[in-house]
Length: 296
Length: 296
Image 1 (cartoon, rainbow over the protein chains, first blue to last red):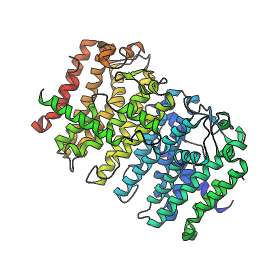
Image 2: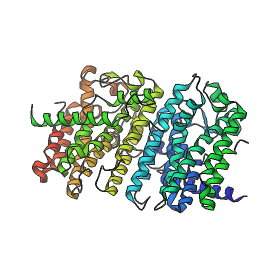
Image 3: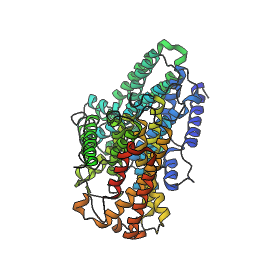
């Protein structure tokens, strides 16, 4: 097992155990809601956003145990968005991470409330005392996550995505959508990790910001490549849904080969910003590799 | 026009103009989402939560202009909950404040995203710099609103409400549901108003907390009385829905006359806690009167 693989397994395990400790126990009322929240969050996914938070924290000098809660908060926002996206009025997807999606396992009303309550929980966690030494910096973290989640971030990206079905988007319109839909939260994950350090250096914050914007887009390009290539079993969610739903993707706009070139180019852009920090940025560099090389 | 009526009109106007200024303009992308957010928030409702925030702020010595943003944040959480509650998978209500509800005016996917984005916006506003002189106190405000909104507050109350359809609840089970479903956010509204003061006195915070818990319950009892009595035109939403949906209410459990007695009793409990503060608490006292005397 190489060094990055060992590190990422460790961070994933740390994230699972933080989420397990931070989610309300399912014997606490309302039990069904808490059970469904746990069902939707636990035991799934690569925890890419938590990995990014921890890698950025490492560059800025924050210990992993100081980064747990912020990383968990971002994963909760991501989990809520998946629960709502899978609902019949959105993507209507029955499968998520190889299991029935939340509204299939429970019902639509429960899925709606699970998403709502996971969003609240993210802000509850991120505002609990002691995430940062400095309360003003912690308020900035809350503000950043809220903007990244809202109508000019993730939720707005979803709205643009919905409006794009059946539309002939060009590459820049597609990019605009993804910058909001997935890019905003990926950027927030990295920056929140950095803010877990007591006094993150401004030049590091700036580099992390640039890195995260490139890698966020790369992540989506790779997702589109995977969706076009993979079958349902490998993906753990229903494959080929995008093409079927007549949704524009990087593959439908650019073709598979140019989409791969774009992923490589975004990957190079991302790590370019980290060069001044040498070995301190190794996790972010390795993570960029991990994100963009999933498919080739 | 009496003094309270003039005050409440002023606070309502102040709240409308704060919300108008704080919601993203509908010419900003994604336009449809921003338009639907404004449609769901603006120009409707009595703004009871904003009135509570301002009345509590007045008792603690915070000026109205210092309380605007916190009051708006609570109203946004309330508005998001109405949008999601009206959706077909929840209460399936076509009418809200005399207009088509959000999913009828737009569509289910838009209503889902409107609710999601309004929740994010509430936390974005409450974490913006300068709500409080003290950043730690402001973090506590964010934390309080998040808990009140989440699975052990409003969203949890909704889950209990859903589970209660067709069940024979007793009064204490019904109370438990309402303490979560509406009580938590009403309590948060009053406490957030108080926290807008630079250093709210602990005995005032405690009195406001007790007051808000009693008045929150009274509010729900009165709502049940109104729902049982009023017709659709007066209510601005579909009347008699609760009985039709076989939902337990204070009226179905206690009967109309004992429900009215309970509202009076809760009203008396609420204002009892304010006695030590004399005239400083006049708005809270008048508001309690306003909330519980709506129906008789």
